[in-house]
Image 1 (cartoon, rainbow, N blue to C red):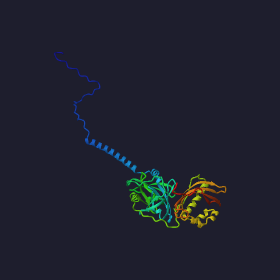
Image 2 (image 1 turned 135 degrees about the vertical axis):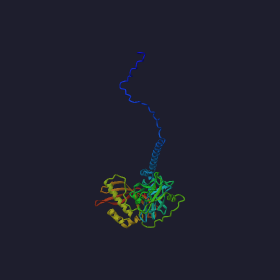
Image 3 (image 1 turned 30 degrees about the horizontal axis):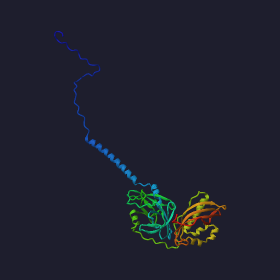
Image 4 (image 1 turned 180 degrees about the vertical axis):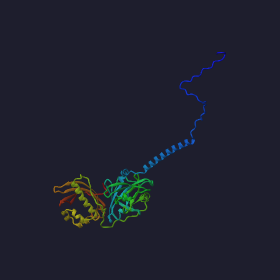
Length: 394
């Protein structure tokens, strides 16, 4: 203190680098944080739910679509034992169709192949042959057969109920060459044009679902007029209370023919040039025999056989015969340049034919002698290699 007065305070030091206050600064209160919008939270949750539902619906649609598709190769494997090749000797010379064994010795096929039949047989995929009788046919072209012999083949049963109209189906049937095929025919709701998968020999073929059960049968007089007879009508034609069938009159003609398609025996030996030449020659022989074109057969015979077998006797020997299921099991050359060919096959004929002894079908095992004349193989004779057996026996 000086003179009783307080000395002034020294100026206040400001740290170096501090901002200089130029005006009075006051703090303004800040509003509280905003709460999330409730509708926004709801909308976000709703979108998530929709996405989950959409994903589930897409997965469900995919699973259902997959369950309605059919694997044609897989279903073919499952039904092959019960799908048969139907052959017949008839007055009209039709006699070729596919068919299905549905159990209890019953076979469904196309009635158009069996007009005025004299004899009917079925051939399984493994080559066994059985004769059959026709119980009747329906107005929509279904023929019901009863097998005479017995088979241990697994049948293809009729489906228990009506199929889903969106489920894909497959047609199982034989080609003219004897190959069994499986082709999709679409769904009952969207059926594929049958003409795109059909041939005449596939008439009578079953239409099956993915489980291998019969849901229809293809019938018709021609490929162009073919149609699928649905399950509910097939169910009427079988069983102890079958309805809707009328008896098909048997053939009364003295001369009948089987299918007119070309025949080529199956070759069960090495495909050597000589075996292929013999196969072709025997195929020509069987084809002309089935067509009953005996005049065209004369060049197939050797000169010696032609003299021993006159035209009229050849015709009389085969008035109702039809040769099928032929297999060449042996081919051996001869010193003279010819060939011996052993062939097994079945022959279908009228039970009233000469020498039939009441049978309708026999299994033959013959060795044919083919000689070479003017550079070409010609048939010169045959020898029985094993006793003739009925087709209804293994």
